[in-house]
Length: 88
Image (tube, rainbow, N blue to C red; front, side, top):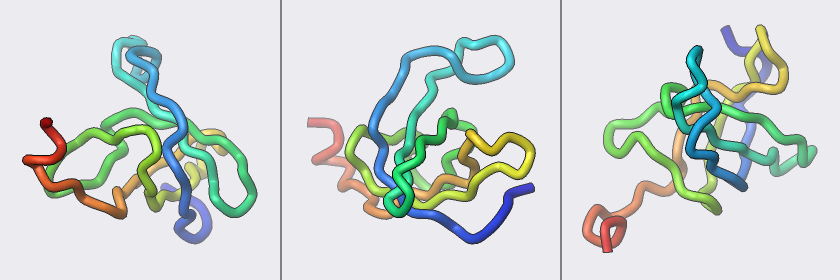
């Protein structure tokens, strides 16, 4: 369950491992645009109809986890890339 209203932020880092129960999933770091706090999440928290990945510098909307206040959840990409541009 998430807490509060949706936040907006910028993806500032991607780590190839460290997320998930076994630590083998890639994890991401988002910086809140309003209060500049950092939150982490893994690809399972990305809500999408397309690509389930995010690049550094992308803008997202997210909720802060009520169970773990340093974690983001329900992460939504605000600008979906054109697939032909994405895979150049």
